[in-house]
Amino acid sequence: MQLIMNIPKPIQKAMDVWYKEYAGHVEYLGEYQGKGAYCYHFDEPVELGFPVVLLYSQDGKIEEIGGPKSFKIIGSLVKDLDEVGVE
Image (cartoon, rainbow, N blue to C red; front, side, top):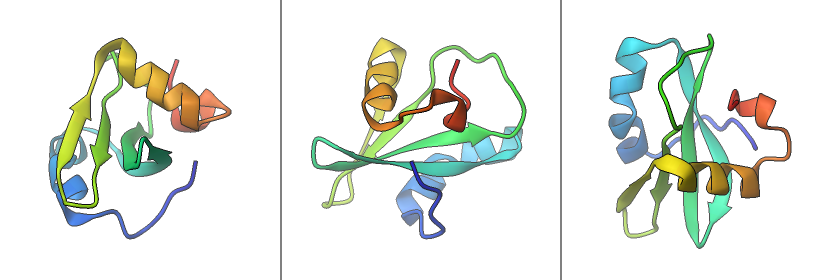
């Protein structure tokens, strides 16, 4: 997992709802099935249910993944889940 400063604008816009409500930042998790995977890292613990992963394809499309599948994606890309604050 790496924090990168040049998060694509469509991903930033899709994450606006999180920026407005919670302190934190968007993290790039890595590539998943040919798409960039991003999630919001909350600075403080929150209880919101399943994490949301946004998959960003080269053609600019965003796919929002929630539910148990989001854990599968995060688990396949992140070695230490504490790094992204997933419990």
